[in-house]
Length: 293
Image (cartoon, rainbow, N blue to C red):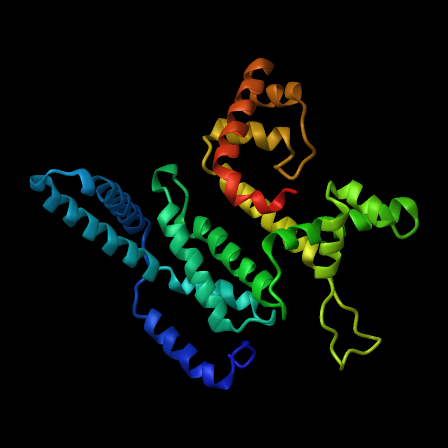
């Protein structure tokens, strides 16, 4: 563990934490399904409790307690997953213990939102939430000055347009050209460029080339969040959007091409696309707001 990003004083706490979470046994698929059922039942009971009759209230409180116990057991059984993921993000300006704490918050959100009836493995589902929580913490706290999520998204967009215009024009693009290409105002382009300025190390040599991975992080975060939101759609609506917008790592397909792949009439594909986009707009109004201008 010598290569971990931990202060010597924190290493003792980290070892103690590993020893503590090691006492919690891993969950089987059957246990995950059963615990998820109790968590869902507890949430439903919590909603009904304020309006329940006195005779029913005692039973509902028992279900709420069972759901909370199941939620705690689900979290405890996956704490080692958080540690394994957090180790991959060390060296980015946040200590391993803080990364684990942020990852645990993502795990808690995954437990609250997991639907076992869809047939997905919980660990696969939780990885998205854990990585999202850790990634957002890195973008917020790894700088000397915290970067707002909207400014972070703008900076990634401006960087992408800058590279595209630089290749196409053969010169440095103007601020107005960047604003047009990124669909942002000139003021927001200036702000995005200002946030890209980072403190320079006094030990930086000419051989040290800084790596700008903001755009990669931005695209990965957007793709991760979008794929997660698609999981809330049924399989047919998912397939229509994935084919139409090239979310299968392929180029986008026309309505006719999508209809041929799914063996459906084109008019039905159009209707499914409208329904899926309408559903995503309702769900993603807050979740994906930071990715739009």
